[in-house]
Image (cartoon, rainbow, N blue to C red):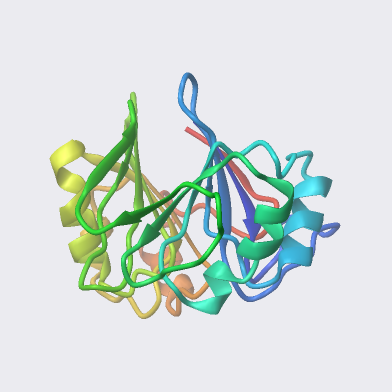
Length: 213
């Protein structure tokens, strides 16, 4: 499994443009490719993808975590260059793309052999869950429902190995003790504390970061 941060507040590669928002391109063997969220600005999203060698027409699935602009802002521009991807959105977000297959997600949902959605938690946000040989990889947009409920929603599929994405004001740091990798980026307010407590688990984020599990 390979994940590439194509949109984030900071840059990992200096030739890429950081901006407030989040998007992650996910490649899993023998499964569809997934773009999780689309950042705030379509031009920045597409330019970063191009520099990373990712053709924006190639994602088979686009998942939107929640309706906030910094996760949906690039969607319209992406849809102009990708006319085949199936779009999975939480029930609280209702975009209009005539002729496009849009699947509204309320409850937990399996979308491929090893790819799952938590369903819309607390009426606001869904997360992506990928099953790997090492365990589950959970990718969150902002974790507005809370990291605890997200991990609980993922737990029926196995043990969580890695947590990636925005964790907002998360401070229940003990929840990370059994997780092997944490890449807390985008809106995470207490990155330095997580890094201090779990230096062996910490994975630095930023646009251009590639994580292979």
